[in-house]
Length: 174
Length: 104
Image 1 (cartoon, rainbow over the protein chains, first blue to last red):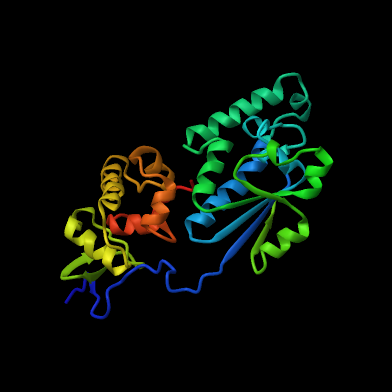
Image 2: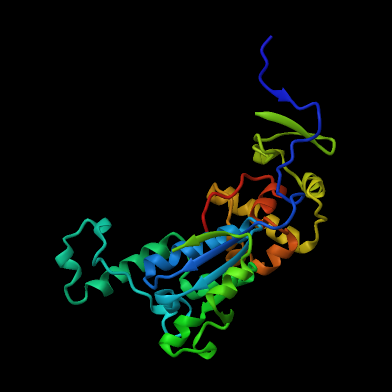
């Protein structure tokens, strides 16, 4: 006798979507970089976590402030300088126009795989229930207030406030 | 590949319970799949499910949330309301498709 299929006699096989699990998994992502290539990891992980039903908070600090500053968020740049993973001579990265060219190329690669640009990505994250916070110290240093920031940023808060809001969360520093 | 019984129909599924045979799915099965995860299908659910089915047939992979929102005209916010918690996976399950592979 050849058995080709296992017929489930017990209860039906149904995927576990975690609906029975007690709510409470939280993720906190601290975004401290303002380069185009360093903005995406935080956004992609936040989006993935939200899609898995995880409460997600992003905290933008230092150079990461560029990512939520209205005048800059659509114009983040990528530079080859100091990045050996491009496998290009470092001197090349310093030539005039190279950062613009590298940025253009990276934007095209991101666009080609169907991943949105930064402002549109934020819209999706906010629609998915993500929380955006700005760092008080960075705002003070750069003389920026809420009117300079992306509208969905919920507030400019201190590091202590963020730690309090994300009690029990898993944490990523980018 | 395991076989499981949804309602009164036997279907082939993977180890998690996602259907593996595109042709074994129909509207009645979708209602029963939805019921097993606590969802009652409305017209809005069907709009997303029909898109997923057609898109899979032409693309060979399950659409991500962003793809559904962009091309089917059901917003991300609405998808989270229709399929709470893990919308992309729940939609795929009800539509009888594999889990989406894309990151965004």
